[in-house]
Length: 196
Image (cartoon, rainbow, N blue to C red; front, side):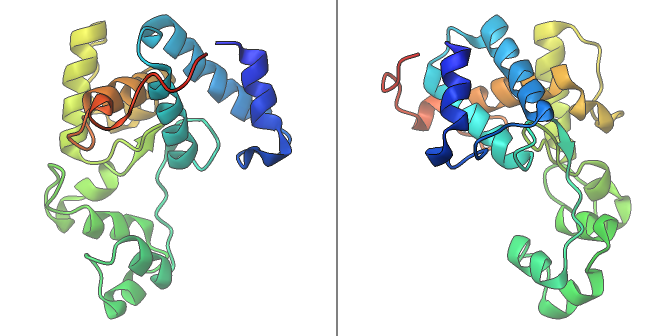
């Protein structure tokens, strides 16, 4: 990929993404992701890269760096984000208490235990793609160790999900193989539309 052309496109006023400038952190994050893509995934369709970069943009709040979900929601934010898990009264009781919000919103799903287990907070989203839940941490552990022999345990050490290497591969490989949704990128992305 022609990176100069790529960055010029991102900096165009009408790109709708980063405005006319990128911070050094955003450039560093993009370079890390592009380097990972070039080294490990460049034989995949370019449309997968577009999807992956869009995922990182959305999941990291445009920082392009692995981040940890903060969950410091107002009552309204809780209701907008997790309407299935909080009534209006409950949202008011949990507002601006990130740990309590995570433990309730992520309880009894994605491999997590109940609200009292603390799994919701322990396995809240982290990385370029918000790897959320104990089951997703276990899946990423298994797949990344098999491929790279890293010797990591993201269940025992969930903070490792934010490691730049782990995070980048979780994004690219996880999206490609459908770890997060059960749908592989090839199941819904039409390839052959773009050229590098």
